Image (cartoon, one colour):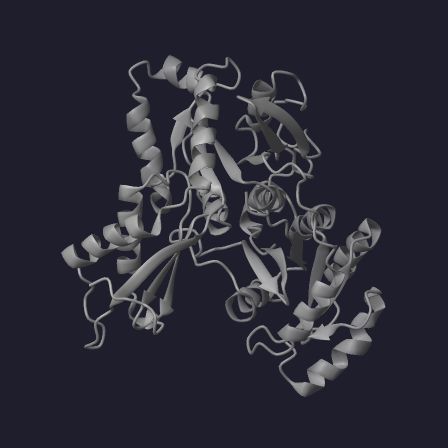
Length: 455
């Protein structure tokens, strides 16, 4: 089994309108090597797996809070901001507090700083909108009162200072988590929105009450790891049911879920995305599926409360419901969908065989001659369209990596590879080899002298 990546979490926090999202987008778009975008989930991305100076970390944007939603539930914007900072301080390894270099120190900055100070997390102060040299100079004195050391002047618009910011973040990251000693142990992350039955599923799989189960979201305060054996193999189950927030706090649920899920997904081999089969797939479910795929984890979609579905709609077909789920997560049609009841254990026995199959697919390696035979036939039957009068020519394909599977195509010019043709090649591989539940990485490299043409 390949070594697992256990990145730390970095949260960007601050009061509204200081440019948190702009800074986040600048960092992941220009300075960090991130996994290829997943269609359908990146438009309003809140998180990304990133790398800087050989250190990997997950970065979280807290600007996803909807002031309108908070106001609708009677929550003041200031209170929503404070809760946001509280959650970040509880869950993140490093905090980037963003302030506005142009408008200067604001009372809400003091509120946020007070919360962060109590939590004793490493904090980097980023003074954004410091496009002018005088603004960059002014930030040092004014924001020093917050007590977080010298601010780093940055401009999210122009990208100035972001390298210094990233250097400081990496300095404060905790040491990388050690790899698991159990080579045969497979880590499963149970992810999903609040109150869909994640803790109940954990208890059902373990066969004992190891995690508090409650109808009130937020009652499981800490993620619980539990190891169990199935058919002679060891599985580590990571429960992500808890969110560090008050049950009555209605705002920004997606943000709290993101903080919680990022760490669990990063630690796992396979993510079990649990959703409520009664209410169906929601926006947050799609986002969580996108995170798991972007971080190249195995993924299984689990519809819980199947017993209630059967009561309300006795004629419901599981195949029809699964097709409806796949249409909601169209970017992940290769993912298995199953339904069960964690409460009554109905259909529970079918879950672990699916897990075992996806685990096998994570480590599946296609022999090079067989792979090239399949790719050659596909390219001949459906040759790529010319780009600017030039034709893409693929000479050789190989699979140098597993867990997750990684394929390399040697070609005349990687710039000629169009998105739809890359998708065609991935679908070709999936059609001939079983990679259900597993994201595939396709890389295209320029031809070497020793490469032989497929066509």
